[in-house]
View 1: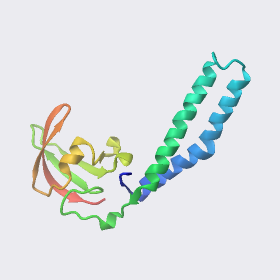
View 2: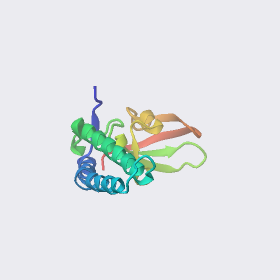
View 3: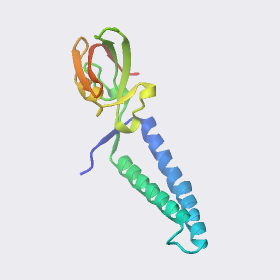
View 4: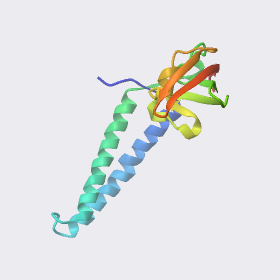
Length: 159
């Protein structure tokens, strides 16, 4: 059974574009490399051939992975997302209850769209799992590899 994957329309389109490039460009380039390496003769000691075959294997695996993800994807409409609690696609403003009192903001997304540089964290990450279902005013303790984090939920909204 395939797990449902929840994506924004942008995330879905990015995966579709990656798949298109792999199928229509990368796959052909890899096949050319294999043909070129074959032309060099003895395949048993041909590092170019081995590298091209490995690249082909990685490309085909990524194509299959993307096809499966796109087939099982549900595109979420931000207008349909509730903000009474933390859900996928909600943004949450948190106050660090430790010494700093720092205010941080995260948007919870699927693993496929996570990008910590943009403040997008996976709902499957330790922080994401701890925040799902929480409401404004609640305090949460999150166990991460570095230790424990303590936050208070200040605001839940959709960007």
